[in-house]
Every structure is written in structure tokens, then in C-alpha cells.
Length: 306
Image (tube, rainbow, N blue to C red; front, side, top):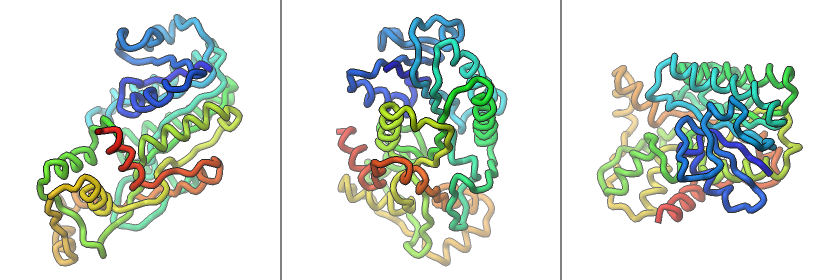
């Protein structure tokens, strides 16, 4: 089976390719802006893809490549997400590819807040950032083009992803705890739920897609771990799992309400500790295999890190 993956040199792509490389019946074709020729004989550039220089048909195309939304401006996001996807879709027919998987973002629903809202796939989309707005536009492009070009798609809306090689804010928090430095958490009565996503769960659903191609049938899924959990709970879990000596400093109710009135702290607390709960009941019902919890995902992460 020929599986093409863009962004294989990135955080999620690298983890996915390492996982899929273990299956003898899967032939990986990786496509990147700057191919590492010594890494794989079947690694291509986007230029080679668009010029028809890949001499194999593609059974499933997995599109992960995307600029870092924290560091890119609108023009780079437009080219790196929307235009890139449009160009990929234009050559699917050349490679006789009828199955397309796109990684969007749960950020199409909005940003973290102090309200306990659970977003499902039918929730109103209210993207706030350029990154999320372009991801949503690209989703609509895929849906429109699927009718013209006649291919089937799955669009995943992943939540906060963690795993080996992450360079996110969560990774920075883990580094603080690794070094047994003090860390701020919220009082239990103030904890707000977030949905996290282990790369292990990404690997699981992609494996199911590959071996059940008929299930790639024009669907949008939220993708996250089994249950939402507060960031403070994640910090506690991680600290206990690695036996860190970090001192956890709790923000109590009084301090919280005072800080909320100061715009810069309001924004910071909302971003880091705010609620962003994504409902994954649709994907759990669709797939037979159960998604793992964030606690189990942290165990897998730590086992791989050793």
C-alpha cells in the first residue's frame, strides 16, 4: 500500500512515519519542502510531486505539512496551508489517489476561554487567529474539490498535541518540571478542562484509516484523547510520573479574580489554563478501537523518551 505523507520531517509527521515504518505492507512516500535525501530513498519535494516525478500511484494521501501558527504571518499561512493544499488536490488524479486525509485544527472553534464549553463537529466555527481562519477555508476547499475531482476525504480537527519532539508550550512546561523548578497551577476549584491529544492516538486512527480505506468517506472528526483534563491535572500527573521535586504554586480564587481584572494577566491565564473542551464522541462511535487517555498518553511519551 502506497501512503504519501507531507510534513514527515515535522513533529507529528516524524512520529507517524516512525510508527508506520514498522508495517511491512506499508510503502511510505514522504513529501517535504526540503527533503532529507539520506533519510529515505522515497522522499520527494513538493516540486517533484507537482511535476509528476513520483513514479507510483498513491493509495492514501495524508497532508500534515503546515507552517508553525505561532511564528508565521498571514501571507505565509495562506501559501503554506491553503495554496499548498489546493496544489496537492490538483495532482491527486495524476497519482490515481482517491483517499485524502487532512489535519486541520480544533482552533476553528475559537480559543481557550473561562467558559466551560464543549465543541462538537456541529458547533459553530469562530476562528480567531489567521492560522485557524485559513485552516477552516482549507477545509471548505477540500469539501468543494472532492465533488469536482471525485475523491473521498477525512478532515481531522486535532486539539493540543503532545509527544516525543514537541516544541509547544506544553513541552516548555514539562521542561520546567523535568528540572524540578517551581510551577504555577490553578486551585482545584478553578480548574478548567482542556482536550489534549497524544501522538499515539494520531497513530492509532491513521492505522485504522489505512487498513479500512472504505471508512475514508467525507467526514470531519474532532481528534483528542479519551477525556478532557485540566492543565493543572496534567502538571500534577507529569510531576508524579517523573518523581519531580517541582514545587507547585496554586493560584487561589482571590488571586484568580484579581488577576482576571488585569488585561495582560487575564489573557495569559486564559491562554494557558483556560477551557477548551473538544467532544470526541463522534470518532469514538465511528472507530471500534478506544482512544487512550491523557494519563496513558503521558506514560507512552515517557517510555519513548527513555
